[in-house]
Image (cartoon, rainbow, N blue to C red):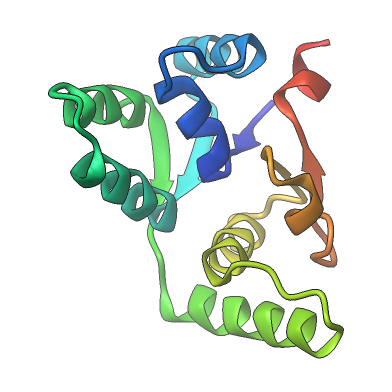
Length: 138
C-alpha cells in the first residue's frame, strides 16, 4: 500500500520524542519505498531546518527525505490548490494555504487519503480522507 504524507508526520519523526506510531510507519515506508510527499512539504521542512538550533537538523531531514518520493509542484497543482482554498474560504472553513497545496498534490498523484496529524484541516477537502499513523499501524 502507498501513502501520501503531510508535513506533520515528517515532523513527528524528526522530533526527538515523536509519536511512536509515526516512527513505526516510517520504518515500514523505508523498507518498502512507498511514501510520497509534496515538494511543498520539503519547503516546510527546510524552513524548520533553517530555524532550528540543532546542528544535525539538515542531515536528519535529508536522511528522512532519502526514501520518500517527492512529487514536484506544478502549475496544474497550483490551480487546484487555489480552487480548494477558495472553496473552503467561501464556506467559512479556511485552512492554511500550504495545506491546500499539499492536498492538491496528493489528489494530482492519484491519492484519496493523506496521513496527517491535522485531521480537522484535511477532512474539509472533498475527495480526500484524512488518516493518522495510528489508523494504519493498528
